[in-house]
Amino acid sequence: MAHQAKIHIGLEIGTSKTCFVVGEVKAGSAIKIRGISVTETAGVKEGEIYDLAQACECLTDALAKAKDASDVEIGSVYLAVTGAHIRGTNSRGTYHLPDGEPKVTHEHVEEVCSIAREVGIPQDHVFLHPIIRSYRLDGIEHTTAPVAIHGKTIEADLHIIHGYGDRIQSSINLVKKVGLEVDDIVFSSIAAAQIALDSEQRERGALIIDIGGGTTDYALYLNGAIAASGCIPRGGDHVTNDIHLATGLPFSKAERLKVSEGDASGDPEKSLGTAQLTDERGGEEVEVRRSILNDVIRQRLEEILSSVRSSLPAGAVDSMDAGVFVTGGTSQMQGFGELAAGVFGRDVNRLGPPKFSGIQADFEDPRYATAMGLVRYAQIIETERAG
Image (cartoon, rainbow, N blue to C red; front, top):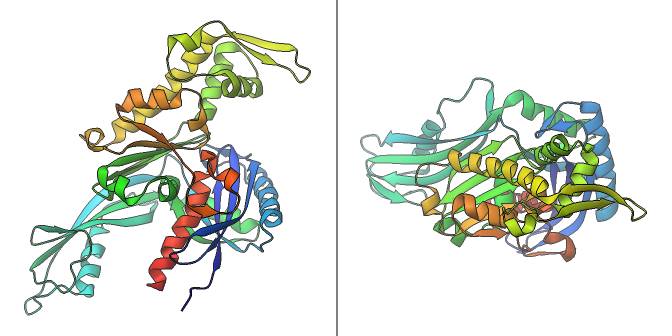
């Protein structure tokens, strides 16, 4: 029997933008994008809400645009969350099968996973994702639950993503304030990975870095399973602020100069002469030495990428045979790929168009990776339930 299409909506409330993606989903089939809306965010800093009224106004505007773009009545969303409070922890549970029960059952698997989830997290944190990495039965590794196999001791390795409960609840409250319910909470880099990485790349070893205005989220996959994740509370807005401090330009002009003239690669040839910014009438408005502009950009982005690298497990970079995958608006900076390749010593890949139907022109924009990944995440959950 054919699966009925359902509508799932991804919502990202970022530091610089609020983005809705409305997708028509069938279990196991291609996703059709019905509409995308993007508005500038206010009231959010480093991924966390500090002014509820401002954030609510932006969300209301984005919601109205999403309804107009998709011609869909929106009642609930899959919500992306980020922030320095979100952390990833690896945990292992061990369970000895009782006497007289020689084969692993589903109940045994549930028990060992429950034990693995008992890892200590801060008292004010809540679980976001308890992700199963692998199982072992009497020391032999299994990628799926070893149900109906004879054994004595089963182990489960989990990657547990958790965050500060009050801050996550603030995001949920904001969504409810505009009349929406939350279907699920998803860490941003987990969402982006759903469309940035395929199973072969995860198996070979890949790192996804989602660098936005206020945060840089990452997720590392080794041998097909997630191995590390986290958030660095810095992003493109910090680069803009550094330019503002170095040049004395207002923040808005520093942002325009960064986007139109900046280069992060560190290539001396790209730092010759001066960078100019023109006003609306085409007249010269700003002139800054390229060497100063590019040094400021490179230093901050290098610091962010180096923080991601130092957060990874020992030896992880050498195991990333598929390389680094970058998404998020700041990844569009000129020279960003070259800089990232230098920091990690690995190939750097930008997000290509996923296999969705609909508004193809928008799909290659890495700013939408997280919100679109939420729709793909919803599809995976839907498929698992249908199975």
